[in-house]
Length: 223
View 1 (spheres, helix red, strand yellow):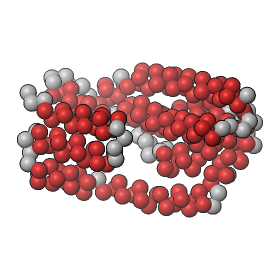
View 2 (tube, rainbow, N blue to C red):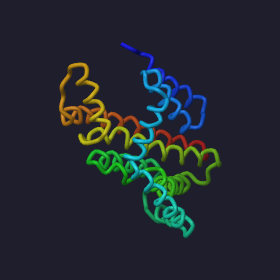
View 3 (cartoon, one colour):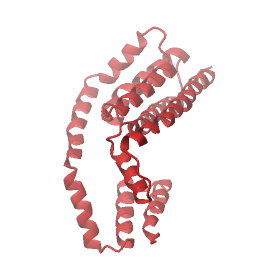
View 4 (tube, one colour):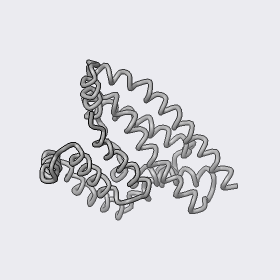
């Protein structure tokens, strides 16, 4: 077997570790993989162009972003903070654990685009988590506020990543099925999706524990 095409994975890992431009890293890894697999450079570029053309719906993102920007300009984040400030018993830990569960459940039934960083985390989840942390622990240093925002983004990532594989019609499940079938293991997408449930539960418990521990540590930092 020709293992040289796997060098593309190393390029991705090294590129991200060195914090190079993600788009250049991914394109470079794709070109390297194609060339090492025996394709000429023109064929690799054609494949990239065809993939982009077949997935043109990705341009919808550029329609959403101006809408989110206008909502933020007219006070969406301020309103989100006000909701949390007026909600009795709200804490950053409870809020993010709830969002983690919500993200996993919606991703598990195929609604993976209902959340996300630009449309949910930045305008709603992060400001609400920050307001809840300040409400519970008092004013926080700027560094701690940034960590709250980072935890909000991480919560979205974990919820989506470990929830979407439960939905058997997702591309990742079909990819796993194809790889296993190539090695002689014939499994249906539903069988693979069922085995993603224990992983999702573990991810919820582990990351939920990290969120609550972080919330407690914030209290000690504020004091």
